[in-house]
Amino acid sequence: TQSTRPQRLLGAVQKKATRGNPRSVIQTIDQFCRQREWAMNVGDEKGCILDSVVTETNPTTVLELGTYCGYSTVRIASLLPPQARLITLEFNPDFARIARQVITWAGVQDKVELVEGASGDLIPKMKAQFGVNTFDLVFLDHWKDRYLPDTKLMEECGLLKKGSILLADNVICPGTPDYLEYVRNSPRYQSQYFKSHLEYTKVEDGLEKSVFLG
Ligand SMILES: C[C@H](C[C@H]1O[C@@H](n2cnc3c(N)ncnc32)[C@H](O)[C@@H]1O)NC(=O)c1cc(-c2ccc(F)cc2)cc(O)c1O
Ligand SMILES: [Mg+2]
Image (tube, helix red, strand yellow):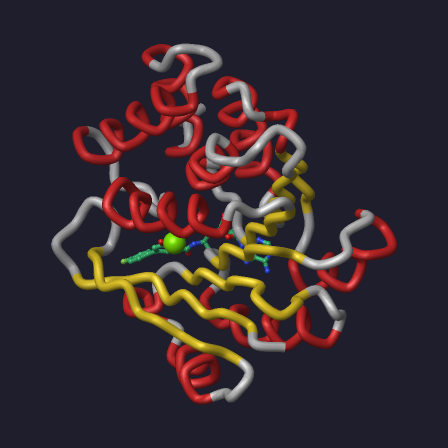
């Protein structure tokens, strides 16, 4: 039977990347996406912006919405201090299965909890079931029409504190117009746009960084 693109991406990682070396896994996936097949990872250009936001936030608790193959999961986890943890949500079981193997190959599995399910169902369970108080950083990279409802849900569930950072991928392409309008006009957020390009292309895209003001 035919392999899927995530399976071929994992194959490249297991063939070319050094086990236990997150940077090598990232480099291998970027090379695969540039030379073989495009895939919807945040990519190397926007990835550098992600790295700088993670580093300056120095988060203890991170939430990622939309794991896909685990590229940004590995990128973020590799920058976290030892006791920090990253919870990543993915509702496609086939993608989740691939992502677990990419995360383990990179050696960051001890910092990552991959939960299979839909963000809308899981966010309300974060405190009771996952022992989370608040998130220092949230990376939004799932269905683009879920960014706004899930942000409101996180507010309602008390998962954001003064200074919590929301970092959203794809605010231009594919685009998240209702989310952008909300975080840019709400008095509860201070927003900043980081202009970049859609992963592995010359098409404009960018990341929106929004600080929750409480
Ligand atoms: C949505 C996907 C990323 C993953 O998110 C999981 N997911 C979804 N909704 C939920 C939920 N509610 N809860 C948990 N997980 C969830 C899913 O299964 C995918 O694995 N990302 C994209 O579609 C995406 C698309 C493009 C793109 C850009 C230009 C084009 F011409 C074509 C595609 C670029 C990007 O950078 C993306 O990120
Ligand atoms: Mg994305």
